[in-house]
View 1 (cartoon, one colour):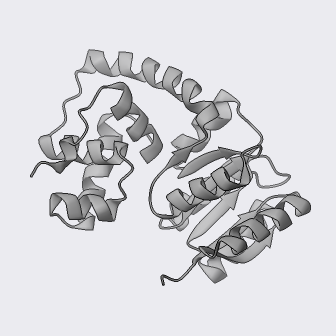
View 2: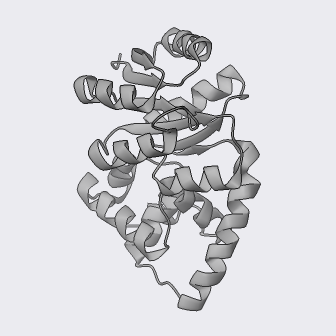
Length: 221
């Protein structure tokens, strides 16, 4: 049996933190190693405990969720960070995705759906709340129009990597599928983000689906 993922909760509502801790602990897949009410507390604790996962509120007093997310992606980039918030505002969603959020979920999610989404993020698969898919698609259409003018071209390996990201594969599974190293996959992902002017795996997956990238394209050698 694999060891549970160490998880840190950052939210300024104590009752919600308690409920989330019980939900994640009961699954057996997560071990809640910290539960704090502010971004600054979360950063301090993360430096000592080095969690695998962070579930983070977006709007908090003091250091807000976006600034906290940016710190994690800069200083502890190996940590998967899921934003869990009540905000479905376009600006909030796009800002979090551009800052590198591994997931963006709404607090009114059903417990089972929330647990499944956070589990997927823990395994390297980005998740966006289904209610936000239309909003993200609209933003991506705007970017696609700009990129069409620039005629962005992808290499075959980049297309294969992108197709597998769209299917929900983690870097490790992409490496196994393509017969390359994890490090090489990370390089391809970095190139894709740069070429397509995107900031997260979630945006890459959405871009691939909207562009009609053929399924299974990543399986070619």
